Image (tube, rainbow, N blue to C red; front, side):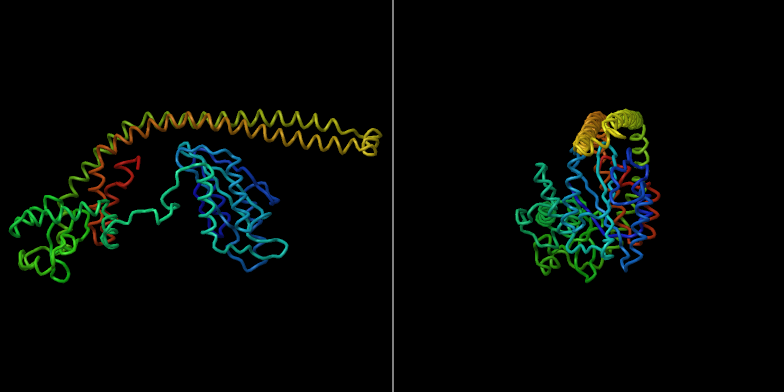
Length: 426
Protein backbone atom coordinates (compact mmCIF):
# COMPACT_ATOMS: atom_id res chain seq x y z
CA UNK A 1 0.00 0.00 0.00
CA UNK A 2 1.07 3.58 -0.59
CA UNK A 3 2.33 5.28 2.58
CA UNK A 4 2.40 9.07 2.81
CA UNK A 5 3.46 10.78 6.02
CA UNK A 6 4.44 14.18 7.34
CA UNK A 7 5.13 16.07 10.54
CA UNK A 8 2.47 18.61 11.35
CA UNK A 9 0.75 20.78 13.92
CA UNK A 10 -2.90 21.86 13.99
CA UNK A 11 -4.25 18.88 15.86
CA UNK A 12 -7.81 20.21 16.11
CA UNK A 13 -8.05 20.87 12.38
CA UNK A 14 -6.63 17.43 11.69
CA UNK A 15 -9.14 15.77 14.02
CA UNK A 16 -12.02 17.58 12.30
CA UNK A 17 -10.70 16.56 8.90
CA UNK A 18 -10.35 12.91 9.85
CA UNK A 19 -13.90 12.77 11.23
CA UNK A 20 -15.56 14.52 8.28
CA UNK A 21 -18.66 12.79 6.94
CA UNK A 22 -17.58 13.27 3.30
CA UNK A 23 -16.63 9.58 3.32
CA UNK A 24 -19.19 6.77 3.18
CA UNK A 25 -17.97 5.45 6.55
CA UNK A 26 -15.62 6.86 9.20
CA UNK A 27 -14.42 4.70 12.11
CA UNK A 28 -12.23 5.79 15.02
CA UNK A 29 -10.58 2.40 15.47
CA UNK A 30 -7.93 3.04 18.12
CA UNK A 31 -6.85 5.60 20.69
CA UNK A 32 -3.71 4.42 22.46
CA UNK A 33 -1.77 6.24 25.14
CA UNK A 34 -4.22 9.13 25.53
CA UNK A 35 -6.44 9.85 28.53
CA UNK A 36 -9.20 11.28 26.32
CA UNK A 37 -11.66 8.97 24.59
CA UNK A 38 -12.22 11.22 21.55
CA UNK A 39 -9.93 12.44 18.77
CA UNK A 40 -10.12 16.16 19.50
CA UNK A 41 -9.32 15.56 23.18
CA UNK A 42 -6.41 13.25 22.33
CA UNK A 43 -4.77 15.75 20.00
CA UNK A 44 -5.36 18.51 22.57
CA UNK A 45 -3.37 16.40 25.05
CA UNK A 46 -0.52 16.04 22.56
CA UNK A 47 -0.49 19.80 21.99
CA UNK A 48 -0.51 20.52 25.73
CA UNK A 49 2.52 18.28 26.30
CA UNK A 50 4.30 19.84 23.32
CA UNK A 51 4.03 23.26 24.95
CA UNK A 52 6.66 22.08 27.41
CA UNK A 53 9.11 21.73 24.49
CA UNK A 54 10.24 23.83 21.54
CA UNK A 55 8.57 21.47 19.06
CA UNK A 56 5.93 23.09 16.83
CA UNK A 57 5.02 20.08 14.66
CA UNK A 58 4.09 17.76 17.50
CA UNK A 59 2.19 15.16 15.41
CA UNK A 60 3.20 12.69 12.72
CA UNK A 61 0.37 11.82 10.34
CA UNK A 62 0.48 8.76 8.06
CA UNK A 63 -2.02 7.60 5.43
CA UNK A 64 -2.15 3.95 4.28
CA UNK A 65 -3.78 3.45 0.87
CA UNK A 66 -4.14 -0.05 -0.66
CA UNK A 67 -4.26 -0.47 -4.46
CA UNK A 68 -7.56 0.01 -6.30
CA UNK A 69 -9.77 -3.06 -6.06
CA UNK A 70 -7.90 -4.73 -3.18
CA UNK A 71 -9.77 -5.62 0.03
CA UNK A 72 -7.34 -5.45 2.97
CA UNK A 73 -8.19 -6.86 6.39
CA UNK A 74 -7.91 -4.76 9.52
CA UNK A 75 -5.00 -6.88 10.77
CA UNK A 76 -2.91 -6.01 7.70
CA UNK A 77 -3.47 -2.30 8.27
CA UNK A 78 -2.43 -2.64 11.91
CA UNK A 79 0.70 -4.64 11.00
CA UNK A 80 1.68 -1.98 8.46
CA UNK A 81 1.12 0.77 11.05
CA UNK A 82 3.19 -1.13 13.63
CA UNK A 83 6.07 -1.59 11.19
CA UNK A 84 5.97 2.08 10.18
CA UNK A 85 5.95 3.00 13.87
CA UNK A 86 9.06 0.89 14.42
CA UNK A 87 10.99 2.34 11.48
CA UNK A 88 10.07 5.91 12.37
CA UNK A 89 11.20 5.50 15.97
CA UNK A 90 7.68 6.01 17.33
CA UNK A 91 7.31 2.78 19.26
CA UNK A 92 5.20 3.24 22.38
CA UNK A 93 4.14 6.77 21.42
CA UNK A 94 0.45 7.67 21.79
CA UNK A 95 -1.38 7.08 18.54
CA UNK A 96 -4.80 7.20 16.90
CA UNK A 97 -6.07 5.12 13.99
CA UNK A 98 -9.03 6.20 11.83
CA UNK A 99 -10.49 4.18 8.96
CA UNK A 100 -12.14 5.87 5.98
CA UNK A 101 -14.27 4.17 3.34
CA UNK A 102 -15.44 5.73 0.09
CA UNK A 103 -16.55 4.21 -3.20
CA UNK A 104 -15.87 0.73 -1.83
CA UNK A 105 -12.26 1.54 -0.92
CA UNK A 106 -10.94 1.43 2.63
CA UNK A 107 -7.85 3.28 3.77
CA UNK A 108 -6.42 4.26 7.12
CA UNK A 109 -4.91 7.30 8.82
CA UNK A 110 -2.51 6.87 11.74
CA UNK A 111 -1.45 9.85 13.85
CA UNK A 112 1.25 9.71 16.54
CA UNK A 113 2.31 12.20 19.16
CA UNK A 114 5.99 12.95 18.52
CA UNK A 115 6.67 14.12 22.08
CA UNK A 116 8.35 11.64 24.43
CA UNK A 117 6.68 12.52 27.76
CA UNK A 118 9.63 11.20 29.80
CA UNK A 119 12.47 13.04 28.07
CA UNK A 120 10.21 15.90 26.87
CA UNK A 121 11.84 15.76 23.46
CA UNK A 122 10.37 15.26 20.01
CA UNK A 123 11.15 12.03 18.16
CA UNK A 124 13.42 12.81 15.21
CA UNK A 125 12.38 11.35 11.84
CA UNK A 126 15.49 11.38 9.67
CA UNK A 127 14.94 10.26 6.05
CA UNK A 128 11.35 9.30 6.87
CA UNK A 129 10.20 9.57 3.23
CA UNK A 130 12.81 7.05 2.12
CA UNK A 131 11.86 4.72 4.97
CA UNK A 132 8.16 4.89 4.10
CA UNK A 133 8.88 4.32 0.40
CA UNK A 134 10.94 1.24 1.23
CA UNK A 135 8.20 -0.11 3.52
CA UNK A 136 5.55 0.61 0.89
CA UNK A 137 7.46 -1.44 -1.68
CA UNK A 138 7.84 -4.31 0.81
CA UNK A 139 4.08 -4.30 1.45
CA UNK A 140 3.34 -4.47 -2.28
CA UNK A 141 5.69 -7.43 -2.67
CA UNK A 142 4.37 -9.13 0.47
CA UNK A 143 0.76 -9.00 -0.77
CA UNK A 144 1.75 -9.80 -4.38
CA UNK A 145 0.28 -6.54 -5.69
CA UNK A 146 1.49 -5.04 -8.97
CA UNK A 147 4.11 -2.40 -8.21
CA UNK A 148 3.14 1.15 -9.26
CA UNK A 149 5.54 2.98 -11.55
CA UNK A 150 6.97 5.10 -8.74
CA UNK A 151 8.19 2.01 -6.89
CA UNK A 152 9.71 0.18 -9.84
CA UNK A 153 13.45 0.15 -10.54
CA UNK A 154 14.09 3.08 -12.92
CA UNK A 155 16.90 1.13 -14.62
CA UNK A 156 14.29 -1.27 -16.01
CA UNK A 157 12.63 1.47 -18.06
CA UNK A 158 13.33 2.03 -21.76
CA UNK A 159 14.58 5.63 -22.13
CA UNK A 160 14.06 5.73 -25.95
CA UNK A 161 16.35 7.68 -28.23
CA UNK A 162 15.07 11.20 -27.64
CA UNK A 163 16.51 14.14 -25.80
CA UNK A 164 15.17 14.92 -22.35
CA UNK A 165 13.53 18.15 -23.57
CA UNK A 166 11.76 16.39 -26.46
CA UNK A 167 10.48 13.60 -24.22
CA UNK A 168 9.16 15.97 -21.54
CA UNK A 169 7.37 18.03 -24.17
CA UNK A 170 5.75 14.93 -25.61
CA UNK A 171 4.59 13.86 -22.14
CA UNK A 172 2.93 17.22 -21.56
CA UNK A 173 0.86 16.78 -24.73
CA UNK A 174 0.08 13.08 -24.10
CA UNK A 175 1.55 12.18 -27.49
CA UNK A 176 4.25 9.74 -28.47
CA UNK A 177 7.43 11.66 -29.46
CA UNK A 178 7.96 9.26 -32.37
CA UNK A 179 4.55 10.18 -33.73
CA UNK A 180 5.26 13.90 -33.39
CA UNK A 181 8.58 13.65 -35.25
CA UNK A 182 6.96 11.59 -37.97
CA UNK A 183 4.25 14.23 -38.47
CA UNK A 184 6.83 16.99 -38.91
CA UNK A 185 9.06 14.97 -41.23
CA UNK A 186 6.18 13.82 -43.44
CA UNK A 187 4.85 17.37 -43.69
CA UNK A 188 8.32 18.53 -44.76
CA UNK A 189 8.92 15.63 -47.12
CA UNK A 190 5.63 15.85 -49.03
CA UNK A 191 5.46 19.63 -49.46
CA UNK A 192 7.36 21.65 -52.05
CA UNK A 193 6.39 25.19 -51.04
CA UNK A 194 5.80 27.24 -47.88
CA UNK A 195 2.05 27.22 -48.54
CA UNK A 196 1.95 23.44 -48.96
CA UNK A 197 4.03 22.97 -45.82
CA UNK A 198 1.68 25.16 -43.76
CA UNK A 199 -1.29 23.19 -45.07
CA UNK A 200 0.37 19.87 -44.30
CA UNK A 201 1.14 20.96 -40.73
CA UNK A 202 -2.42 22.21 -40.29
CA UNK A 203 -3.74 18.78 -41.26
CA UNK A 204 -1.66 17.33 -38.41
CA UNK A 205 -3.02 19.90 -35.91
CA UNK A 206 -0.12 22.40 -35.99
CA UNK A 207 0.07 26.06 -36.97
CA UNK A 208 3.26 27.52 -38.41
CA UNK A 209 4.38 30.58 -36.44
CA UNK A 210 7.30 32.95 -35.86
CA UNK A 211 9.45 32.19 -32.84
CA UNK A 212 10.98 34.67 -30.41
CA UNK A 213 14.24 34.77 -32.37
CA UNK A 214 12.57 35.10 -35.78
CA UNK A 215 12.92 31.40 -36.36
CA UNK A 216 10.22 29.00 -37.51
CA UNK A 217 8.17 27.15 -34.89
CA UNK A 218 4.92 25.22 -34.85
CA UNK A 219 2.14 25.62 -32.29
CA UNK A 220 -0.43 22.89 -31.60
CA UNK A 221 -3.98 23.28 -30.33
CA UNK A 222 -2.74 22.61 -26.80
CA UNK A 223 -0.45 25.64 -26.84
CA UNK A 224 2.81 23.67 -27.04
CA UNK A 225 5.58 25.25 -29.12
CA UNK A 226 7.89 23.08 -31.26
CA UNK A 227 11.19 24.08 -32.82
CA UNK A 228 10.84 23.27 -36.53
CA UNK A 229 14.51 22.46 -37.04
CA UNK A 230 14.66 20.14 -34.03
CA UNK A 231 11.50 18.16 -34.75
CA UNK A 232 12.00 17.82 -38.52
CA UNK A 233 15.67 16.99 -38.13
CA UNK A 234 16.49 19.63 -40.76
CA UNK A 235 19.13 22.29 -40.24
CA UNK A 236 17.83 25.80 -39.56
CA UNK A 237 19.64 27.07 -42.67
CA UNK A 238 17.79 24.61 -44.94
CA UNK A 239 14.47 25.47 -43.30
CA UNK A 240 15.01 29.15 -44.02
CA UNK A 241 16.04 28.46 -47.64
CA UNK A 242 12.75 26.66 -48.36
CA UNK A 243 10.36 28.77 -46.27
CA UNK A 244 11.97 32.19 -46.63
CA UNK A 245 11.34 34.88 -44.02
CA UNK A 246 9.00 34.20 -41.07
CA UNK A 247 7.91 37.86 -40.91
CA UNK A 248 4.49 37.17 -42.42
CA UNK A 249 3.65 34.43 -39.93
CA UNK A 250 1.67 34.94 -36.72
CA UNK A 251 3.55 35.09 -33.44
CA UNK A 252 3.23 32.27 -30.92
CA UNK A 253 0.70 34.27 -28.88
CA UNK A 254 -1.32 35.08 -31.98
CA UNK A 255 -1.40 31.41 -32.98
CA UNK A 256 -2.67 30.46 -29.52
CA UNK A 257 -5.37 33.14 -29.73
CA UNK A 258 -6.55 31.82 -33.09
CA UNK A 259 -6.84 28.32 -31.71
CA UNK A 260 -8.68 29.60 -28.65
CA UNK A 261 -11.20 31.69 -30.60
CA UNK A 262 -11.98 28.79 -32.88
CA UNK A 263 -12.46 26.25 -30.10
CA UNK A 264 -14.07 28.09 -27.17
CA UNK A 265 -17.70 28.68 -28.28
CA UNK A 266 -18.28 25.21 -29.63
CA UNK A 267 -16.61 23.56 -26.63
CA UNK A 268 -18.89 25.30 -24.15
CA UNK A 269 -22.02 24.06 -25.91
CA UNK A 270 -20.66 20.54 -26.31
CA UNK A 271 -19.68 20.43 -22.64
CA UNK A 272 -23.10 21.56 -21.51
CA UNK A 273 -24.88 18.95 -23.63
CA UNK A 274 -22.52 16.19 -22.51
CA UNK A 275 -22.85 16.98 -18.79
CA UNK A 276 -26.64 16.96 -18.97
CA UNK A 277 -26.68 13.62 -20.76
CA UNK A 278 -24.22 12.02 -18.35
CA UNK A 279 -26.03 13.30 -15.27
CA UNK A 280 -29.35 11.88 -16.51
CA UNK A 281 -27.86 8.45 -17.23
CA UNK A 282 -25.87 8.23 -13.97
CA UNK A 283 -28.58 9.47 -11.58
CA UNK A 284 -30.37 6.13 -10.96
CA UNK A 285 -27.09 4.24 -10.49
CA UNK A 286 -25.74 6.82 -8.03
CA UNK A 287 -29.02 6.73 -6.08
CA UNK A 288 -28.84 2.94 -5.81
CA UNK A 289 -25.26 3.12 -4.53
CA UNK A 290 -26.19 5.77 -1.97
CA UNK A 291 -29.03 3.59 -0.66
CA UNK A 292 -26.63 0.65 -0.44
CA UNK A 293 -24.16 2.67 1.63
CA UNK A 294 -26.92 3.59 4.09
CA UNK A 295 -27.98 -0.05 4.38
CA UNK A 296 -24.38 -1.09 4.98
CA UNK A 297 -24.09 1.44 7.80
CA UNK A 298 -27.27 0.03 9.38
CA UNK A 299 -25.89 -3.53 9.17
CA UNK A 300 -22.65 -2.49 10.84
CA UNK A 301 -24.43 -0.72 13.66
CA UNK A 302 -26.66 -3.76 14.18
CA UNK A 303 -23.67 -6.13 14.30
CA UNK A 304 -21.76 -3.92 16.73
CA UNK A 305 -24.81 -3.66 18.99
CA UNK A 306 -25.13 -7.46 19.05
CA UNK A 307 -21.43 -7.87 19.75
CA UNK A 308 -21.56 -5.30 22.54
CA UNK A 309 -24.52 -7.07 24.14
CA UNK A 310 -22.78 -10.43 23.94
CA UNK A 311 -19.58 -8.90 25.33
CA UNK A 312 -21.45 -7.64 28.39
CA UNK A 313 -22.98 -11.08 29.02
CA UNK A 314 -19.64 -12.84 28.62
CA UNK A 315 -17.96 -10.30 30.89
CA UNK A 316 -20.50 -11.01 33.62
CA UNK A 317 -19.85 -14.76 33.27
CA UNK A 318 -16.12 -14.20 33.60
CA UNK A 319 -16.58 -11.89 36.59
CA UNK A 320 -18.75 -14.49 38.32
CA UNK A 321 -15.80 -16.87 38.42
CA UNK A 322 -13.96 -14.56 40.81
CA UNK A 323 -15.27 -15.25 44.32
CA UNK A 324 -15.44 -12.71 47.13
CA UNK A 325 -15.32 -13.03 50.89
CA UNK A 326 -13.76 -16.15 52.45
CA UNK A 327 -13.96 -18.11 49.23
CA UNK A 328 -12.14 -15.28 47.48
CA UNK A 329 -9.45 -15.31 50.19
CA UNK A 330 -9.05 -19.07 49.82
CA UNK A 331 -8.81 -18.74 46.02
CA UNK A 332 -6.06 -16.14 46.45
CA UNK A 333 -4.12 -18.36 48.90
CA UNK A 334 -4.51 -21.49 46.78
CA UNK A 335 -3.60 -19.73 43.52
CA UNK A 336 -6.98 -20.37 41.91
CA UNK A 337 -7.68 -16.63 41.57
CA UNK A 338 -4.58 -16.19 39.41
CA UNK A 339 -5.62 -19.10 37.19
CA UNK A 340 -9.13 -17.68 36.80
CA UNK A 341 -7.83 -14.23 35.88
CA UNK A 342 -5.50 -15.71 33.26
CA UNK A 343 -8.37 -17.77 31.86
CA UNK A 344 -10.59 -14.67 31.72
CA UNK A 345 -7.89 -12.71 29.89
CA UNK A 346 -7.44 -15.46 27.32
CA UNK A 347 -11.17 -15.74 26.73
CA UNK A 348 -11.57 -11.95 26.48
CA UNK A 349 -8.77 -11.76 23.91
CA UNK A 350 -10.25 -14.61 21.86
CA UNK A 351 -13.65 -12.91 22.00
CA UNK A 352 -12.14 -9.69 20.66
CA UNK A 353 -10.49 -11.58 17.79
CA UNK A 354 -13.74 -13.41 17.07
CA UNK A 355 -15.76 -10.18 16.89
CA UNK A 356 -13.14 -8.45 14.74
CA UNK A 357 -13.07 -11.39 12.31
CA UNK A 358 -16.84 -11.30 11.99
CA UNK A 359 -16.77 -7.55 11.45
CA UNK A 360 -14.10 -7.92 8.76
CA UNK A 361 -16.19 -10.65 7.11
CA UNK A 362 -19.18 -8.29 7.01
CA UNK A 363 -16.99 -5.56 5.48
CA UNK A 364 -15.71 -7.95 2.80
CA UNK A 365 -19.25 -9.03 1.85
CA UNK A 366 -20.36 -5.39 1.69
CA UNK A 367 -17.38 -4.53 -0.48
CA UNK A 368 -18.44 -7.25 -2.92
CA UNK A 369 -21.92 -5.74 -3.15
CA UNK A 370 -20.55 -2.23 -3.47
CA UNK A 371 -18.05 -3.25 -6.15
CA UNK A 372 -20.90 -4.62 -8.28
CA UNK A 373 -22.76 -1.32 -7.99
CA UNK A 374 -19.58 0.67 -8.52
CA UNK A 375 -18.69 -1.41 -11.59
CA UNK A 376 -22.01 -0.52 -13.18
CA UNK A 377 -21.21 3.15 -12.64
CA UNK A 378 -17.67 2.71 -13.97
CA UNK A 379 -18.93 0.88 -17.07
CA UNK A 380 -21.21 3.78 -17.87
CA UNK A 381 -18.47 6.32 -17.16
CA UNK A 382 -16.09 4.36 -19.39
CA UNK A 383 -18.66 4.54 -22.18
CA UNK A 384 -18.90 8.28 -21.59
CA UNK A 385 -15.12 8.55 -21.78
CA UNK A 386 -14.91 6.56 -25.00
CA UNK A 387 -17.23 9.04 -26.69
CA UNK A 388 -15.66 12.17 -25.18
CA UNK A 389 -11.89 11.57 -25.12
CA UNK A 390 -11.33 13.95 -28.00
CA UNK A 391 -13.52 16.61 -26.41
CA UNK A 392 -11.68 16.21 -23.11
CA UNK A 393 -8.34 16.75 -24.85
CA UNK A 394 -9.63 19.82 -26.63
CA UNK A 395 -10.95 21.35 -23.42
CA UNK A 396 -7.67 20.84 -21.59
CA UNK A 397 -5.72 22.17 -24.56
CA UNK A 398 -7.92 25.24 -24.82
CA UNK A 399 -7.20 26.04 -21.16
CA UNK A 400 -3.46 25.90 -21.87
CA UNK A 401 -3.85 28.53 -24.60
CA UNK A 402 -4.55 31.23 -22.00
CA UNK A 403 -1.42 33.17 -21.12
CA UNK A 404 -3.17 35.37 -18.56
CA UNK A 405 -3.95 33.44 -15.35
CA UNK A 406 -6.94 35.69 -14.56
CA UNK A 407 -8.56 34.97 -17.94
CA UNK A 408 -7.74 31.28 -17.58
CA UNK A 409 -9.56 31.05 -14.22
CA UNK A 410 -12.59 32.84 -15.65
CA UNK A 411 -12.71 30.45 -18.61
CA UNK A 412 -12.44 27.37 -16.36
CA UNK A 413 -15.25 28.72 -14.17
CA UNK A 414 -17.46 29.21 -17.22
CA UNK A 415 -16.92 25.60 -18.27
CA UNK A 416 -17.75 24.16 -14.83
CA UNK A 417 -14.55 22.21 -14.12
CA UNK A 418 -14.22 20.33 -17.45
CA UNK A 419 -11.48 18.04 -16.22
CA UNK A 420 -13.92 16.31 -13.86
CA UNK A 421 -17.21 16.77 -15.71
CA UNK A 422 -16.26 15.70 -19.22
CA UNK A 423 -15.03 12.26 -18.20
CA UNK A 424 -15.88 11.34 -14.59
CA UNK A 425 -14.23 7.92 -14.71
CA UNK A 426 -10.78 9.46 -14.99
